[in-house]
Length: 386
Image (tube, rainbow, N blue to C red; front, side):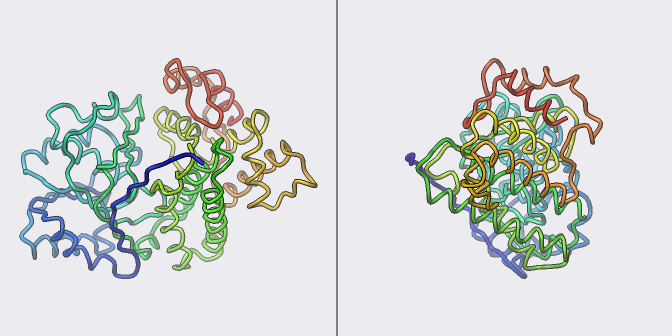
């Protein structure tokens, strides 16, 4: 088991009427000028906008809002809101929605106190001297960004991430009822995203981290059970609550303890969504189906372990490589059950951009830790995804 540090100061307020705590949370964070970021009109339909305006009015907080966030959030909107935030002397950023809104808020919180271009944090790895406070009202169950130290942004050609503990939100309000109005597709790509975060952490070369192994395996089992419940009854509020909590558990870094996670599959998907603007959760379904098939032939032991412990593939009945391949089959069946595509060809994507994406992602090096992928291996995984 590797040594580790774990830090996550996010305050989570979870459950029915959790949003009623917003006024007190803003008071605790001494907010004077608030920038609200979200996407579309759903926050008004859900009554969240009224909750926010009432809280800011009661506390005398200046409120600026923007509802232009889109999936695979853009650096262009962030730059615009950084300028507006500086002019309005914004000292806190509140995101309502899912990962796109939250990552946009995190980038704005980096950019407002910074004298340079906010893209520097993502493209050059600049370390911030100051970060504004961030709050979240989560309305999806997917990215886990509401309690993570990471943000992902797109510049069009590039999709890049930034990690720093200072962009962990100060608080996350999570009312599972807000997820009831999500379209079926968005609900199920969110579940695929949650599973992808658990799988990335499970696929580690560390052989002695039993506690984290069993925690991840348990989380995967809970996700599979509650996904089935939602497929049967999309109104099952308890299943939605379990999955929303799992989204945070899967990505708040607690399950990194004692190991090095892989993350190659996310690097591959980031290239796909940057190149073709595909939905991240569905992209992860496609990539993990292909990646597990590829890795089964290269280093099968971790895949075989998961196949045995979660899917009941007995080592006495199946050799290691066979169990690894069976895991890939089980994952594809699950993604199909969610109604997601598992091959790039289903999205009309061919191999013409594979070399460009591989070179861009690896930059002469490798991605991933369980099996490091150079540009040629990167392409081989993509070809299996066709």
